[in-house]
Structures are given as C-alpha cells and as structure tokens.
Image (cartoon, rainbow, N blue to C red; front, side):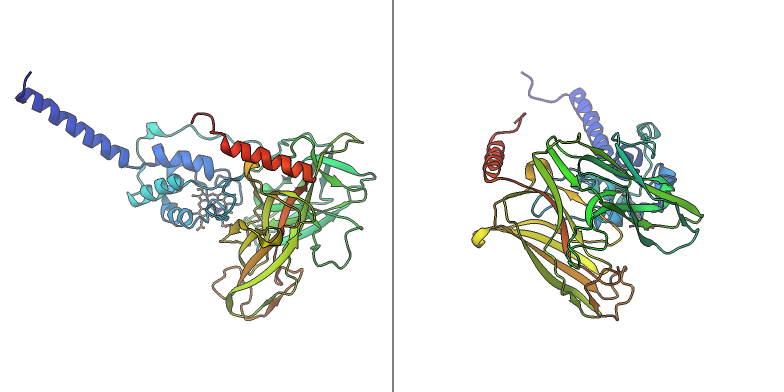
Length: 433
Ligand code: HEC
C-alpha cells in the first residue's frame, strides 16, 4: 500500500478542490432565473402581472429588477404576499395559505443582497399559465349579479361600496358550493365580499353589521368554497345578498360588475353539518382615544354546544392593528390561543381557513375570547384623522372589534368521536417516516 502522495495524486486533488469550491460558490449565488423566478411564479404573479390592480408586473427579470429593494422589504416584513396571520401561534396550517416559507424569504433576501443578478437565461422556468378570469370553478344553479355596472372613474380614492340584491329565493336551500368573482372590470376590483341578509336577522342587534352575515369572498387567484360532503350553509327563502366591494381606480374609466354563483344540494336534502358564520367576541363599547396607539379591547362569546371551528377572520375598520382569539375551556381549566393576526391591514380582507387536521374541536361551554388592538395615531397609514375620538359604528371611519368565525355545531357523540379520530391521527406516524 502506498503511503506517499505522488505529484499526480496531488494534481488531481487540487483540481477537485477548485471544482468543489467553484461549485460551492455557484450554489450560494442566488440568481433570478434559477431561484427567484419560481418563487414569484408560485406566490406573486397571480396578482403581479399585466392587467390586474397590483401596482407592477413581476413576470420577467426586467420587470422585477427595479423593485428588488421594495420586494426585499415587503417579504421580510411579511406584508407581501398579503397573509397577515402569525404562523407561529395557535393553528399553523391553512387551506388557503399563500405566504412564503422561511426558505423562500431567505432566497429573495440573498438574491437582493447579492446584487439581484439575472443568472443563466437557460435556467428560467417556462412562464406560468393563468386561467381565464371568466371561468367558474363550480356549476352554479343560481348566479346573482349586480343589477347595473359600477363605473369607476380614471382617478378616484379607493372606495368601499355596498350593493344589496334580492335574488328572489322562494324556498330554503342548502348551499353546497359558493364562488364570487368579477364578471367585468376585474382590474379595478381589489376584493368583493358577499353576505346574506334576512328580515329575521335580529333588528338593532349590534352583532349584525350593515352587510349581514358573511358568506364568501373574492380575491385574485381564489377559487370556489366547496363544502365537504354532508356539510352545507342554509340560505333561507327571502334572503338578500349584500356585495361589499373594494374598488381601486386604475387611470382609465372602467365598468365593473361582480357575480355570486351558488350550487345547491338537491331540494329536500338534509345535511349532517350546517356551517354557521357568526361574530365572536364583539365589543360594542369601543372607546379609542385620539392620537393613541395600541388601544386594547376585549369580547367574549360562549359556545352553547361542542363545535368544530373552520375559519377565522378579524373584523376591524381603519384603525384596526392586531387581533388574537383564544379558547377558554369550561371552568377555565385550559386556555389555548387559536390565532393571532399581528399585522392587520385594513385594505386586505383575508379569511384564514384552518387545515382539516387542525380545526379546533371545542367542548360545549368554551368561551372564545377575542382581543383587538387599534392604532388611532398618525403612524397608521389608513387613519383618516388621528385627532378624532373613535367609537363603535357602521361607517369605516367608526370602528369595530370582533372576529368572523365559521363553525359546525357537533352532538356530544360526534364531538367525542372526532376528538378520538384526531388523537389517533396524531399518534400514528405519517407515511414515509
Ligand atoms: C393577492 C394579490 C397579491 C399577491 C399574491 C402579492 N401581491 Fe404584492 N401587492 C399587491 C397589491 C394590490 C399591492 C399594492 C399595495 C396594497 O394594496 O397593499 C402590492 C404591493 C407590492 C409591493 C409594493 C409596491 C410599491 O408600490 O411600493 C411589493 C414590493 C410587492 N407587492 C411585492 C410582492 C411580492 C414579492 C409578492 C410575492 C412574494 C407579492 N407582492 C404578492 C397584490 C399582491
């Protein structure tokens, strides 16, 4: 056996070393074509492409490069993509999560810090294909549209507008799937929220907003809400639909319209679970002093039966800053944080749909405790007037503090059974482990 390296061996070794070093450097060098373009395709381009309401397109290197610094700042602050829930608190997985992973954020930051290089054009992935905006993802039995288009002038401050439409429903029906989407002028529709209003809604109840009960929401890239088999929402005869629209001028006069598509279960069908959308933790006695940040308010809602919570959505107006919801188990024997939105942005109307395996299963008598923070100082860019005292009210310049939650009530039996199933799943090692 040889114990001494020959010059030949050493020669090979040094070539190898250089090879490893160059390769190592290449692996560290983050480029647009290889590393960043796939992230933008997956998480940004649904909004940032020509013809939408987003301020710029991010399809190509030429388009993205001038925004490199702004992109770095927005992704680090987790303001873009718009997904403002704290992922390290409470429920961590969501059906509609569009946020960046920590690795994706690191990639973008490295790219910008390394000089925002283009890289090898051959690494560029093929362009992402986008669906036609007119496409329904369900086959609606009923389509409810605004009776006339809304004309958005070329220049306009952002507007939030409510339009009520009576679809003429003469019998109760159970909804199987819902979808809301613009049918005209989709560039000016920042978001659209549909709600149900009914004459039986308790009059004068501060828990019913001017819009009614939350039904569904449109945002770019969102498809239909399809209920799991056996689950449904009830739409009573005589229900009216409220469209709440966030409209955004784009420099040219644009006609906009929005439609709600509904697919029903067959007549006479009785679902096993009826999904309810309701307020939790209202605080109707808001008192938010002028020029004050971090004004805290609280509200409580007690569940009368066992329940499975499906989604969370903070509801505040211009001064909203943050909101958390926790579950106080009966007798206070356990308190569990469910969700926190730590960076609430009034312009974004985001519903956080809990992943199936993490939907909180709560016993009867659990109290949902909602804590909200408002910022009525000049540091809040949505604040129209920090010198005003703000109290509860329907106008966006008044404020509110509650969470929209959707949930199913469960029987005691179903609750026990679902809890058992959850436990069994958590104990079983997942496939591949
Ligand atoms: C759901 C649509 C949507 C998605 C997804 C989205 N953006 Fe945005 N983005 C917007 C809109 C709309 C604005 C304008 C400001 C606002 O409304 O908050 C914006 C603003 C920005 C800005 C600030 C522009 C300025 O004028 O300073 C940057 C930077 C940005 N986005 C980058 C990104 C990046 C990077 C991603 C993906 C990682 C992304 N966005 C994903 C809609 C979106």
